[in-house]
Image (cartoon, rainbow, N blue to C red; front, side):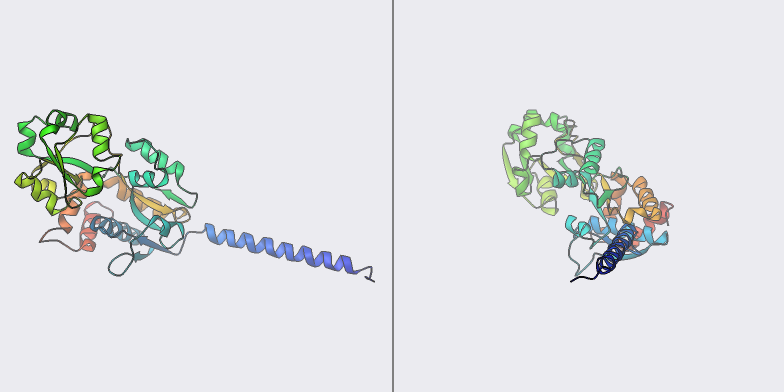
Length: 304
């Protein structure tokens, strides 16, 4: 038979345990919402991303933030999942790529709309800070001679000569919605033939220079465009979505005002021409170390 006092004792113990569990949950939540002591900056395998990540990392260090670099030889490429699981706290990203990842059916192409839709669709654990004006996105490029011969300024101007134009690009551009299908749908442009080349590398540039192709796809921050006097055709109908470079950050990390301040300052100083020039410095036969280029640029921009 249970003694009269037993239920009271058990009830008090249950209440004490409940209170203790509640306290532990609250403490855990406080820890989870506190900015990390060390910010891990990640980068994909591309040279440009490595440079941007180095700029972020060095800028944060100059602001007094402890930084760990999660990029370079032997380190796996940063993915969206790395930010979600906390392996990385900050990484450079492009708004258009983020939107396509978050919502493949999204139709926004202009910079403000793309950025707004990215913010709306990100999970609560992630956020994007202020976007830069720098865009590294696919563009249709021709030689200056071909542009002058055909009075070309935009893809729309290219439409009348598409039937006698060979286009060059990576294999996937032939079927990507914002590749040839988009050009055909928006501009009524069907090329005479398609030549599969590298992903905007030396083979693409060489094919343009020797006339093997008359138009090709290159990234807008590719330093070889200016070096080879190539012309980027405007895309007035928005076939390719905006690709503004933006810091992708874990929300908990953005609670540190130093992180937001310095990354926003960096973004305010970056545009496509600046990023193109930085790419020029880290590529080619006289390439400099991205860490040195990042240091010098931060100093010149008044950030370091």
